Length: 113
Length: 117
Image (cartoon, rainbow over all chains, first blue to last red; front, side, top):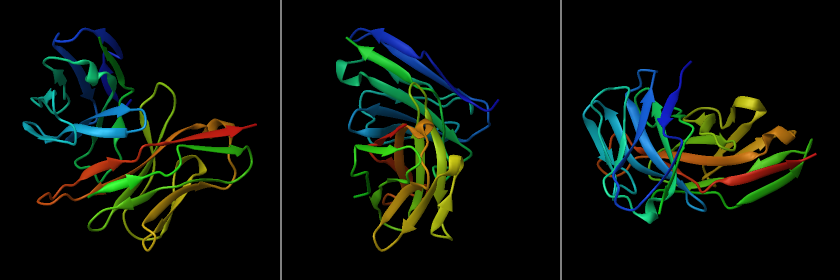
């Protein structure tokens, strides 16, 4: 089954403790991206990647890092999480550009205390 | 600046009645427009898209959307709403930022659709 898998689905942690949210897709897609969803703000793009080793900033990259060492994986790293990063995070992928329908994971709800 | 507006936070409609969820956009160049739906505790699912061609686009679950270039709108419609259509709906536009050849997706804030029996 074609899917985008995020882990963990839920996480409560404390300020400053490094964390990684993994994202994996099994569709051989080149384009992957991370979004955060906040009430009243919709989805905002954090980072995106057009292929292995090619990443770029979205609208709200501050406080986040990404890497794309393999085509299927696109982890989101919070080196020093802060409470304002409490949010619902989504990973998405598409064959090779944002022009195509995005396949979304089921989301990761992060709470930073 | 590139932007997408969904002017209604909530739309309520009775089952069997037609529904409309509004979306307007502001982008430079030709827009690629999308609608997505989000059910509770799930990621977004693609409904339909407009890139070029016929202004009326048909998508999944009986939804359709009409592209109106002069009004810069892309409203989502369905002739007869179902209770199961209750969900959060997002409009999105792919826009080309200056110097970019790929473009990025910009999402609206979402509209909560409630269909009551």
